Length: 301
Ligand code: NAD
Image (cartoon, rainbow, N blue to C red; front, side):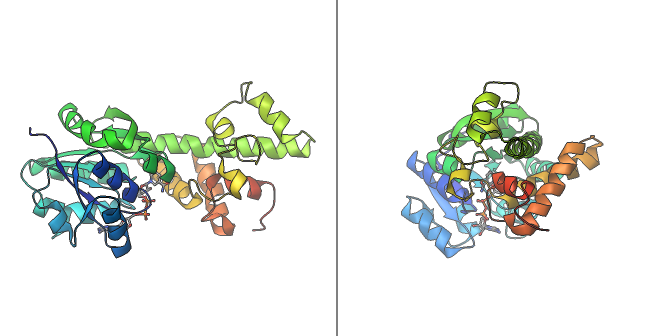
């Protein structure tokens, strides 16, 4: 299979915009398309070629990368009447980096394979800052052959590209990881709230828990109270970061998956309820670590 040199990038939002620019910076010819004209202009300023339609971007491209909000957008962009399947060149490679539900990821990959295309689902961990820095972690679902073709396309945007398994396995890894993150963040916040009530200094508690068995990423890399971790959103009034709305989306995907697969995830269910409450009570656009404020009783509901 020939080397990828031209890439159609569809979905130039907070994440997709900087990702497309990093691919252009790595020497790929990037044809960038988004419904938003502003997003297309920003990508053009970053070295991409702005396309006025999906068809124009996809026509003749060796690969297509998509970074869209949810499963329904991915279905429409690939399978729609005027979509990627209708315009892509024979044997093209598709990489969907959106975070979506596992059944949709599997269905779109199946449709792609039946038309002779190669496709991987490759959602990412790391927010806008990692998208800009080219240091995302990609969790990739697809055959060994498709993974090998996708790897060099994803590398300029990545600090790690990990093969999770067959089609849909990337999405499965992403929602399991983020369910764990949501639960661990709430646990970390509850520990700080209790420590405060017990008169413990937050910095002292941090110093101890960071070296004790309570240590976890939400504590030591993303501390939900201001002070201990300089880069954490808690030090900038909980500006995201990783917005609560996004965390809630991922927790809902995890609960859908738990229901359909029959997995028992009581803490995942509780985390979804708490984030839904926070989202409705002022947290929607706040970083997900801001839930410490709701747990402290700062918001009435
Ligand atoms: P966003 O809303 O900023 O960007 C989505 C873009 O897709 C928008 O610019 C929109 O105009 C475009 N779009 C929608 N439908 C389209 C269509 N039919 N054709 C062309 N463009 C279309 O979202 P985002 O923050 O960039 O997130 C994208 C995906 O990445 C989501 O699935 C999200 O869950 C996931 N994600 C986000 C983050 C984060 O921190 N923002 C982190 C990891 C993963």
